[in-house]
Length: 188
Image (cartoon, rainbow, N blue to C red; front, side, top):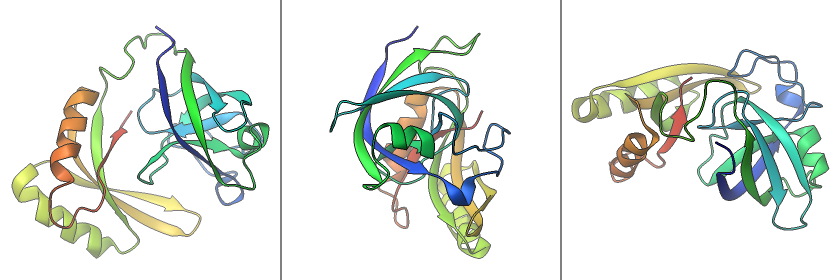
């Protein structure tokens, strides 16, 4: 099924990540038409249309992110150039699925989802948040990520089968003391 769409803020990433592995295992090429999305399956093709200048491009999802609250998609430099958003850094867009990878039929209904509640450069800060949340939420885990500015420790809660369950968990986590943001991410 194609045609589902979302509207939100797009950002882009380039030089510091160029040549590094993406979440899918591919090497990131800032000159390719690719993007990071938190929940769409890898190898999903989406049409990204600027709601500010009506330009559009088509990209393939091969990474996870953006990990900033309020952002919907992180575009490669090439895709950002196609939308003329390099100077602004962000832009309001509509993201529409145009092709799903074989064997992936459900929009966001099935898969393995989690809720990210923090990302820290100090591992002990991640461990403190984990210890605080584990009493109430049980499955709280830390994943490390090597970014251009060093290693980060992402704190994630739960391993859920549906996007809807994960969104419900995120809603509850947003009210927990010490949690400043909570958003759904796809683990596979």
